[in-house]
Amino acid sequence: MREGEGMRLPTIAVRLNRRGVLALLALAMTAPTVIARETYAAFVARINTKLPDGARFRDDLEEELRAAANGYRGSKGLKALTAADDKLVAAARAHAADMMLNDFVGHTSSSGAGFESRMRALNPGVMMLPRMAENAARERSKGPPDSAKAQRLFQQWVKSSAHAKTLRSRDYIAVATGVVEKDSKLFAVQIFSGPALKTNMFGSAGTPQQQNGTEGDSLY
Image (cartoon, rainbow, N blue to C red; front, side, top):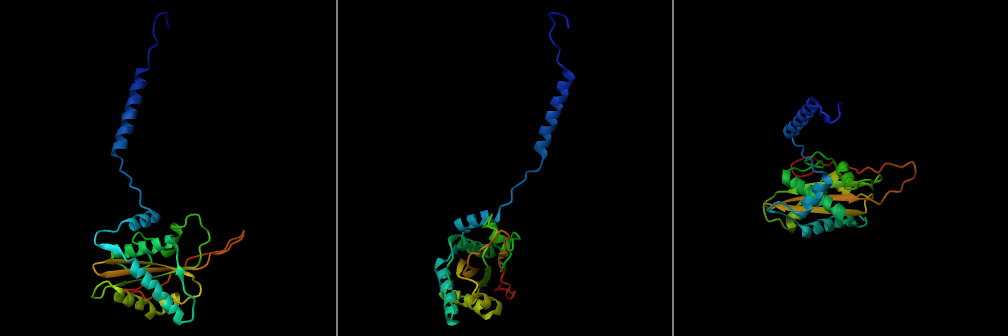
């Protein structure tokens, strides 16, 4: 290069780079938007904060069903169940709300999460879960969603051998109850929990036990 001449820029290379940038921008603009799927834990937090219009949690009937469970256990000479912690109550309420929203009764959520998966989603990083079980039902008989209707729902569990077995199990020391009312229908879930499990360096399985009762229109 002679003195006084400036350095010539590689114009062809610059054009190619600009084309590449434009191509990348076009690709980014046409790529489909990926929407993050709501986690089960996020669903539980959201639905416990606000139910859809026309639906409400019935804490009075939740307490009534817990009392009914303890009355039933007492008639069998068994110890009463204590009230479970807020996390488990939120889980019971969320599943009752899910059943109400999607008009079903069962242990698998509308998003496909089974009972154990739901419990583990709410306890991230916890290897050892206590023994757990779940009863679920809905009551769609005529009449107001009152104490009498809640008792009719509870009798569904008592009259089912599998559900009654869970109610009187000695494995559990606490129960969380969730009840949702909508259009005079009641959707209820009880989650039973045993003592915290102890573990050692080898670990041991603490798997929630899904209560599979009579599959039908109103009970599971």
